[in-house]
Image (cartoon, rainbow, N blue to C red; front, side, top):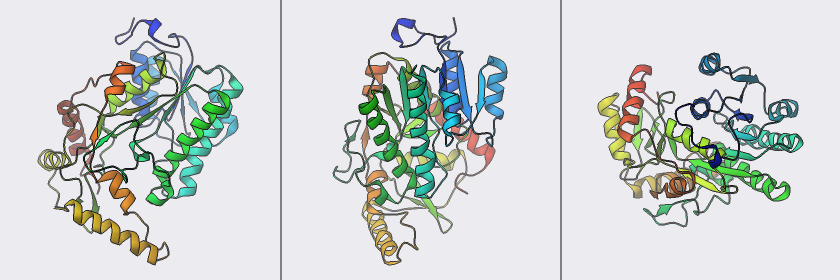
Length: 356
């Protein structure tokens, strides 16, 4: 019995049932594979694009004899092959680098549709776990400092946020819920906050953005909804295994999260000093308002990367809760904030300054 294994009666599958992980070679996906192995599940089908860097995934597969399947979710045939006979799907693959709305929709929403159709044809599915994001939330009608939890409002017009990723994730969730209603697909949605750790050197935009050689610090006293990548992977795995949570949505955020100001101060001290200018909330709001209107006047030639919807979602400021995650899944962050930041800052020092 492997470390981390919990009595099988708590789960909807046993350790021999086939499990599909899409995006298995990604920043979070590779950790999901490792957590599943630690829990005693060995019948894993890890789907990755043929063009991906598979070094990390292959090193895991060589030790554990898991199945690494090469394919592209934009192909219905590849989806059929990947979904054949699987009991649980962990769907992490998505378009994170595509800045165009068309590309993000194709590689996030269309691929999810093909995969859902494939699991319907396979007819073995017990749960579909979809990894979404805090990016889907809107704060426009919420006061600064209010609690953001699973009942909070999702963007009703995500196309106005100017972020293809937000748009695609909102539409992906809508699609999954539609398939749940129409075809009784059992699903769970996880919305991680800011996932950090070795393998991802970027400073989240919730802290600030780099423009004209300066780092514009926009977060100030806002709490940053950090979740260490291993803690996030643990939550994802439990969402696919626990009984009685079909149809639920879970936010994933760690305990004792720092403010933006605290995070930036630690980064400068432990990684590298970067020139930064702090913009108080009134000034950052005015900047987003002006940029939004200049974008409209330019007829779209100036990308609407800053706007009031984005300001509300990322820089207005919230409190966060992981109580639902703890109560229904029995999850708790195994890696503390102190240890997680130590590992992250050490990685950043090794690979160079973030956001260059």
